[in-house]
Length: 219
Image (cartoon, rainbow, N blue to C red):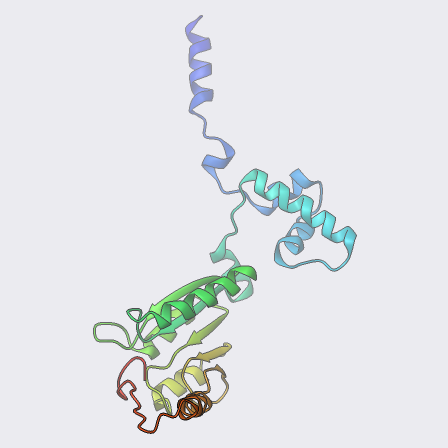
């Protein structure tokens, strides 16, 4: 084997592959699937309605998986103004109740193509909930699920932050009234009434009620 052959083989071995040197882009997928870049973009962004389009999308997704395509979240955030991210703000992660809520949000979000960013806010040493909302806005999240720190009416700064956000906000677990938001919370009044009725049906004549303090993360 001559030195020129060794040099040639060595130089080719040192050349980085396509996957190692640069990320797979839509043009690569379009070339592999035999379709246009616009068709690839549509197939990756939404579910088609007719059968022919569904079959074409399946072929495109197979090509994307074969090539090792990974969506560029930053590029999508720049082009569409938001990333496929859902923000979650919780007052605590030390209480089992809150991680269960987060797990449900993550499960439903993943089924729709969203990843979840969780921020614990409100406890000592952590950012305030207003700061957490501003941070999530900088991530260009598509929406925010927020568990207010305190039950009852939210404070004025939090209300202003949400009003200026311009994003869908869902309040979870706390019966707090904030204009422009949706809310998912347990009906504690009805639950208490049902609990009392059941205890009375058991002929309990001395009832005790135990709850968390007003400043507790469970209040």
